[in-house]
Image (cartoon, rainbow, N blue to C red; front, side, top):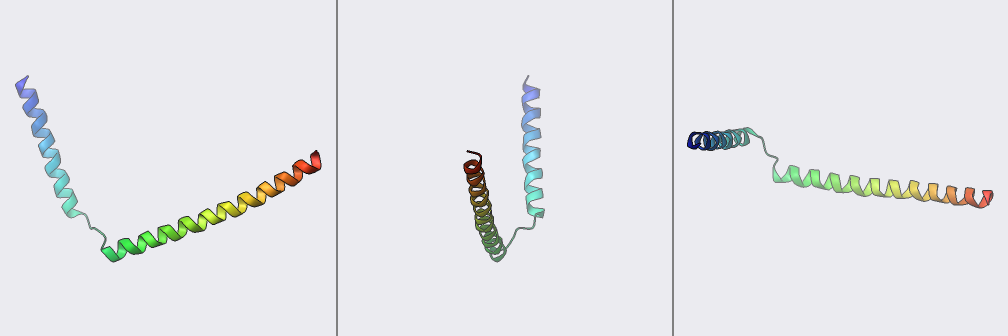
Length: 71
């Protein structure tokens, strides 16, 4: 039972050391890249929000007119 616990702990510590090693290999974006990407994402979200709103309004208007015609 004790050997199993030690084995699990050793595997977990080995996993953490491997994670740390992989994170050191990663290339992290600069502050300028992060800000630029964030601005692009915000602009795209706003654009697609307006896009969906516009088409939703058009289709709602068309459906309302069809309902009036059908009665």
